[in-house]
Length: 591
Image (cartoon, rainbow, N blue to C red; front, side, top):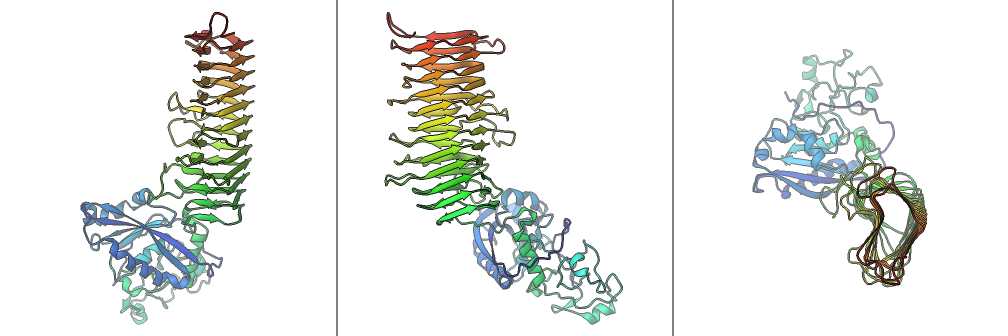
């Protein structure tokens, strides 16, 4: 008699499928992991895959389910190649490490390495499976059926069905209406036909005492050794598989597009949406996000010159789709960010954020590292930038640019931030930036990566900050310049429990720091080096207690030009004003 050699025994609570998905056309991406010898040799090579794809198209095609081959990876281990029990015994762990719920990951091993012919991840459904390659059998079709939430036809985990109970087809057995009652792995089978006479001689009966009849051993999900007998799914099984895909049962997203999404005209995302690759917004095209957009690991939104991205109350975050083929650059813990592509043609990319959220991005809003000429437009009002490695990373060549405007926006990390250190949130070169009523904080308590990672770090840029808050053991604002007329203005802002509040370096001249509060600076409230023409007045520099080496203003080598430090108040500091080097002449200089 035939018996089972499929390793699936662990099934979670499940439900019958009532909806009709028969008209849906679905394409599923397949990733392959081939087990070979140490040197890459062996029976399992790329050449077997066209035959497997052909088999799947034959068995799934009649139900409008098709497949596309994705990337191929390898486990080159002679030990694993010869011993199939290793992979079979660790399928869940290896599937989670190497697989993706973007598609189905199939591990393939040579024939004859274990008694089992194949196995799907536990509990079903999981987006990965394993089988031993035998070109004549439909074991691939069978195991993929499990990944799509099908049970064996003889499965009794939901109760023993009876012919006399009409509800048996949706509440018992395999939960599929049109599969026959099958208690015994479709036995007895002779020449791929169920032998009713022989079954009756064995007195095979259902749970209610009625003799078994109508068993079909040619259904692919029969629990047989001889898979050469099987050739089809039932319509009910096909509907159940499509339901699993359409409803993302088990957290799978097989219905996600795995090609770049190119926006044409205007597209509005007004419900939670997962994408599998990059989004490209072309010239005169617009994408508006009102709901949550889940980006894949290392994926990016590309705004070409003339394209527009509107983040209107929506959220852009990292989804659960991993870049398992390493197609893209970047840190897999993040989605990459919004790429602003510039051009000297006069067209420029535009990004508008109104009460929107960007989280878990690596570079946030950024441009190409080639620093191509051209303008960009960035306007952010009421935004939230959460758990980003960098929120803005715009490094450009010198030129005349539109201002970057940021109002009423919070930049912060919490305990869900995946890295161990805080890094610069806004890093900008050769730009003009105005900020009003913004907050930079760090509830995560992650330490700053190093003393060069300020909340805001600008180079050759005019920066204006008003009514903003910086707090939680960070470095606040650093403004630097080289052979430019860049300057800085900070007013009515608060720096609380900071290592350094503001740092200006050589070339930042004629800056002003007025009416600000530096509350509990661990090191320095304002640190200025080789700058001149500044005005620092009406500020509060104070600590709640005495901290060794705490300084209100540290001024170094500001020269003999007319500089003003006036009407500032200092309390509980080791040094209020601390001057180093030449900061004035006989009749001119520091006032």
